Image 1: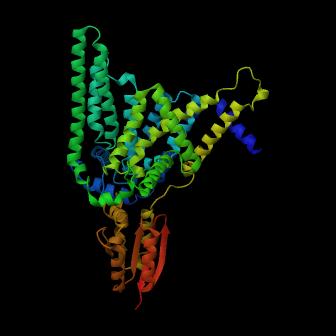
Image 2 (image 1 turned 30 degrees about the vertical axis):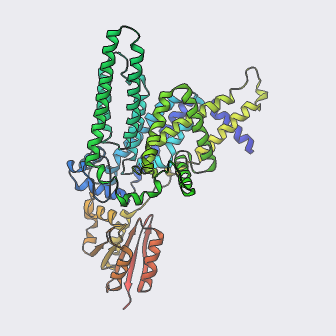
Image 3 (image 1 turned 135 degrees about the horizontal axis):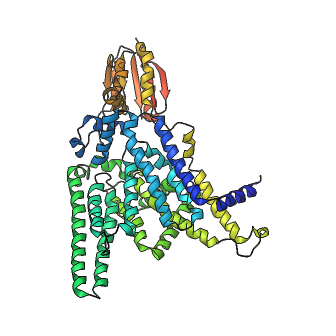
Length: 540
């Protein structure tokens, strides 16, 4: 088939298919993808290993304090993970099952939200694809970090706040149940997801405004009854806000205050603080880089994806402003608060920390895409099938072509047939058992220490690596100059030395390798994804 035939064929297949079934198919595909990656059971990488060490080594109560190894995770998230590891043992799957469940639940909640926000069935498949096959969403679905939980909490709050059945402003049945629902939810969610404070702030302000608006409406009739209702409504709203702020205040006192203002953390995240009022070309460049990161994480990194994403979001904002300001507020204001906090260096915009906000951009894009589709209109009534290539149908075909290209470029579907890997230290350690006689001393590069320590001290099957304990093992800490100290020790070492790397940059490894080659014989023993080991034999 020629290219035009492929384009129009794809268009009409999508146009005439049952979109509801297509949505379910995409949703099931996302669930299958996440389960398959979960069962691939890749090794814990550096950050996962450090968090796993905290969860394995601490009691439940100690998880409500600052964590060790430069880690942070909400206490209730960590506690649930600890429950799974207490039942099933300290394995990769046990550590990752809760993030997996959060990601799977997020897909379903997002599906419901798309049906609520996007009124055109013919284009609903597009946000489903973005959410289902986004690299960031897929990656953190099976990773021992809290980011998939952040997404679920943000989507859950948005779902309830945008549904009139869960609001309590009217003197309706079950009003007290609804009120207590929001009181409890608002107090708890911050302990599951720290970014939920941005979403809660938007919801709280909306509740407060609705309380004041209710006063203006009810004061026009039945004065005594209205005044009583107004006082109760304002009092309940105030109590709600105070309870939420109190919960966040306690969370800040127990956990956050240690990290806020830390110079080392500020230095690490320095390039991820948004300059909301740019004063130089460097600030403008940083602004665009962070905006492009948002759009790239949502739609893809190509120019087409970023350009269309920006246009559809802006159109979606305009449409929501006209149709439902409440939903626009709930979608946009948390993003504004996040960027504002970042401009004061209180919140980093590293990709993983902004993951919770990406579904809001997808929903806005779905609204914008629905409007663009409507502008193309349907086939003009009365036209025959001979006139399929009229202007409106061509515009519709171009729109679908753009959506298809963006969708296909997500490319995470390839992990259905190939492994998703980061740093495969566990199989590397297993393989060393056959080479145990080749070395006498083990040097563990400081970036490999977290995963090495987890697998040899905390792992359920740590006894599998007992053979390493029979050797002299030297671990290098973050506070030391790892490479120079390793080289200096190797210079004075008279025994064969195994040098273990994981998470280490190629530049760092090359530096160590070149230095050691001048001191003796260096041999690459084994290399896997993200990890490697060398045998060093000093020159006599």
